Image (tube, rainbow, N blue to C red; front, side, top):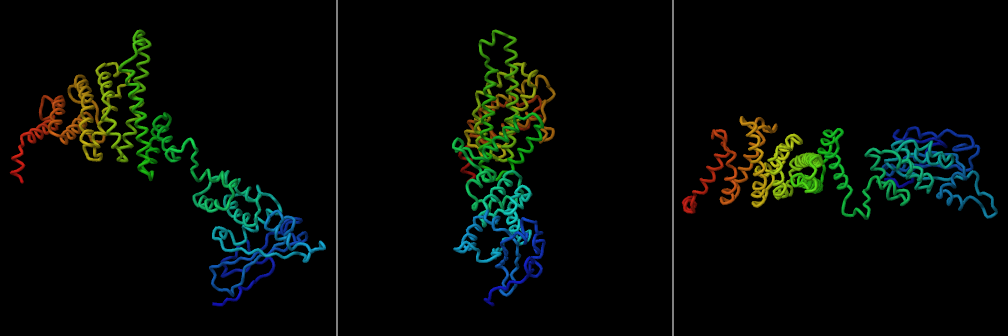
Length: 479
């Protein structure tokens, strides 16, 4: 390979092409503006831009260049040119050693800058040194991104600041954002601070324990469960974000916190309704109004729980929620007390369905093995919520002796109550015989006049008796 210097080729103001690859609008000098940029009459400096491409192996290939007529007073707005001119501009006697001065600026390959020609960005910045028309010259994100590296190279700080101001105020595409990130290390703190706030999370001292993504997810969930306008659309959108979010642990954490928050509100309002203060009982009208408010608040927050449980089931992260639901003996007792009073039916008729659906979704996750709950949690889950199911079933069998009232669309014509009965019986079958014996006796209300209508209960008792009648000797015979 030849080690001779590559040859310069071309006349002033003309751009030589290499296999035609560099021929574009930058091939000829920009139009002269009287008294301003590239005006040979007023210029006192000839600036040659030379393009070097290290990817071109032929060292004998001509070097593309572009000659420009520029003014020294304009160039001095760049610290680079100011230093360059100060060293060679004048002789000791104050006279110039050459007029016009000839300078050469070598340009290396940059794939980002070459999109619009090898000289485009440099010509744009040199023009700004003369015109200072930043608002008229920086018209797009590409303009700003092209100019910043050149302005940094020439130490033209006013141009850098103008480009950064433009970038800070307008949106970027994903590709443009990547280019912005590449420039960050070269910008000063003042220039980069506002850009960084857009692309990098900045955690304040007061929120050290709360990451930016976590805060956003918490806000989205809160908006989804509490927004009335376009609620279904918002919930569907947030559900998709949660499902696609890359960190399953973070989603589980945020959903769990939202579940606990809504559960606490349900317990608070349910407690107020089931055990009203004595002073309110003295005024029946006031008591009735407050009780309606409390019961409506219970319904609203149970709806929130229902939506959160659906999301938790969808993501298969129900372990902690199942444990928490199994420990709600006080809430279950308040619900039983409320359901035994017919008042709730006229105020919140949908409450029974929602409570039962929450229990069913969590119990089904346990029975199907989606959530591997410890033995104590499984037993406590049935023991806590089975009495609530029994009370609701008794109430609706009295009002609808032909059958149950609610239907679960996901399982066709089976009633929701029947689904929960079957699920509880499946969980009971996973417990030790002594625990199963205690709980099965509480399931007798699952029975009907026609035994053929309750095969799930019949099967559960047959399974228990088969196991109970087995002796250790039977196991030895099997082995």
